[in-house]
Image 1: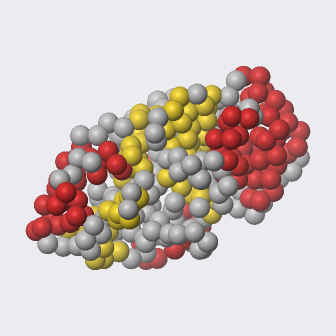
Image 2: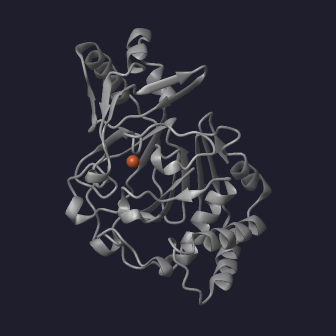
Image 3: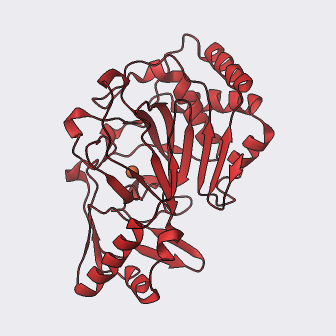
Length: 316
Ligand SMILES: [Fe+2]
C-alpha cells in the first residue's frame, strides 16, 4: 500500500485475483445481466464476492473512503475478463461485460456509494466508455484524444450537491473508473484542489468565491438539456472545506476583476503536476470530483479494436 494525504493505492495479489475471477465467473454464469437494468444485482454479486476475497485492510479502506474524507483511492490488479474490441463508437454490449460490471459496481457499493446515470449525457446510460471515439477525436471530452483535456472537474455547470438528495441535478460527487485497456499508457492525472488554491493570493482567491463567472456545460452533454450556471463562484469555501467547479473550456469571467483572478487560477493550474496514474487492465480508481481536479493529455490512439478503454460511472 502507498498513501499520501489525498491518495491511497493498493495492489491485489495474483492469488486473490484468481479467486475473484473464479468466484465471479461461477456466480454470473449464464446470466445476461445488463448494467442499466440489473445494476443492483451486479452490485450485490460483486460486493459479496469482493467481501469474501479481499484483504481486511483493503475492505476497511473502501468502507471508510467517504467517512475518512479520502480523496483518491486506487485498487490495482483486479481480474480482467475476456475483452471484446474497444467500443470506440461509444456504447458496448453491456451483458457481455457482466464480470467487469459486477466488480466495478460492487466496489462502488463497498465504498457506501450509489451509482447513477444522468439524463443529459451518455444517452442516459450508467456506464460511460472512455474511448477515443473517431467522431469526437478533437473534442475535450471523455471521447476525445487529439487535444489535451487540461485540469478540470466533471460537469461543473451544476450546483454542488448535498447528502440525502437526488444526485442527478448536481455536480457528480465521485467519479469511479475501471480500466480495460491502455496499451497507449495514457496517464489519468489527479491533483488536490488545495494545491491550486494554496498558490492563489488571498484577494484573487476571494474573487474566485464571488458570483462573477459563467460555467458552461462540457462537450459530453446533450446541449439542449443543460444550461450554463451564471453568475456563480468557482471556489466555495466553508471553514476548512473547499470545493471547486472548473473546466478551462467552459468557464468565463463576467468582469475585469474576475478575469484577472481567473488568469491567476489558470496560471496556478499550469504549474501543477499531480499524481500521474497510468491505469492498466483491472485497475479501479475512485476520486472526489469536488476536491480533485483531473486531466488527460492528448494521445495517439492504438488500433481501434485495441484502443484505450476505461469505464466510468458516477457515484453519490
Ligand atoms: Fe473528466
